[in-house]
Image (tube, rainbow, N blue to C red; front, side, top):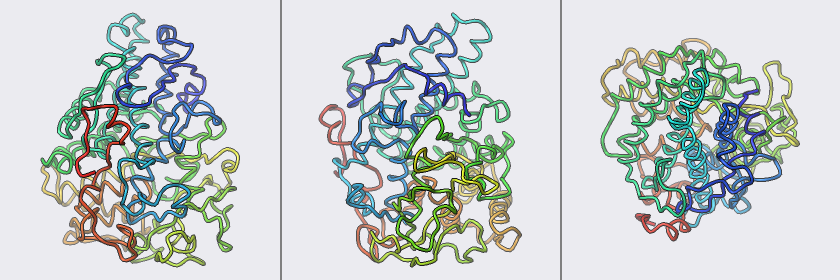
Length: 524
C-alpha cells in the first residue's frame, strides 16, 4: 500500500478548520502544532500523505470528517458530480434525495450545495498545501542532512504540483477565483480575486518550476506525482487555454504531451484492467493515480461511488456480484447520447454497459431502467475475485486521474487545432493505437481524412467516459451550453435545449461572496 496513505492515517497533524476563503490561512486548531510536527522527514511524509488522501478521504477516520460540508462527501465524489452530472454521460437517479436536480439539468445557482462543497473542498486542499509549504521552505530544508534535504525538495515539488492541480480545478470550474499561497499573511487575510489569465500563468509557472524536482516515472512511488504527472497537467492547461484566457496554446500542449510520452509510458493491452481492483499494476499507462485501500482508508466517494453508484439496486437481471459489489446503490446510468456514440456496439471493447432489462434512452430520469448501466468500473481483481466488501469497506479500485490514452488524445486534438511541433501522421498513429486496443485488431482504425474535431470529441467520450473529463471537453468544443449539440434532458427538457452561457462555469458560493468583498459572480 502507498506509504502516504498510511502516513495520512497515522498523522495527528494539521487538521485545518476552513469555513470561507477569508480564513484560508490559519494555524491548525488542534493540540499538535506545526513546530512539533515539522521536525523529521517522517512527519513531512505523513502530512504530504494527507494532501494526497484529501482527494479520496473524507477525514482521518471513516466515522468523522476533517471538513464539515453540506453532503459530507469527499473531493472526488463531488468533482465527478460536477464534471459528469450535467453532461451527456450521467443520468442521476436520486435527484431530490441527493440534491442533484439543478446539476443534472444545468440550473444551478450560487446557493447550490454541491457547488459549494466542491469550492470549499478545493480551498481546504489548497490550505493543506500552503501550510505544508510554509514549513518546507529552503531555510527549513537546509537544517536537515544531505539525504533528507533531497527527499524534502521532492516533497516540496509534489506539494506544489498538488496545489497547482487544485488551482487548475478551481480555474476550470469557477474561472475568477480567490488566490492565496504560503507567502500570504496568516489570519484574517482577505484573498484577492484572480482573473483566469492570472491563475493560468501561476499554474503554468508552478508546474514548469517544480517539474525538475519531481521523480521520473521509474523512480516515483505509486500514487505520488511524477514528472509525467506535471507534464500531463501542463498539457491539460494548454489544451484549454483558449477557453480560459482567449489565447490558444496548442503548440505548447503538443510539447507538454511529447514530454509526458517521453517518460516511457505505454498503453495497457487490456482496457478493462485500467478500471479494476488490480489497476495499481498498470503503471505502464496510468500516469497519476489516487490509491484507494479499503482496509486502511474507507471512502464512499471516488471509485466506491463509481462502482456501487453505477450498479442497479432494482434490476432483477443484473447480478451486482459480477462487478464485485455487495452493496449496489443505483445512483446513475448512462444517457442515451453516450451509448449511441458506440456505433459498433461491443465490437468496441470500451462499450462496457449492461443492457438487459434497460432501455437506451431516458424517458423518466429517476427510473433505474431508463439508460444502460455502466460496467466500466469494477471491484474485481484480474482473476475475477472480489477485492473487498463494498458494503463494509468500500471498493479497492484506484482512480487513474491521468493516463497515457488521454495524452494521446490531447496530442491529436492539438495537432488538428493547428498546433506546431507535432504531425497528423503521429496523431493518427496515436488514435489508431487506441482503436486497435479497443477493437482487438485494425478493424476500428480510421483514415487520415477522418481525423477531425468532430471525431475527437466523440472518441474522447468513448475512451474517457465517467473519468471526470466530459464537462471540460464539451465546453472546449463549444457544445456544453449551446444548441450545436443537445442531448436528452439537457437544460431539463426531454429533447434537450441550449442554456445560458453562464453555465460554462460554476458560481462562487454566496457564503463566500459575503465573506470576501473582492469576489463577484457574472451572470448569477
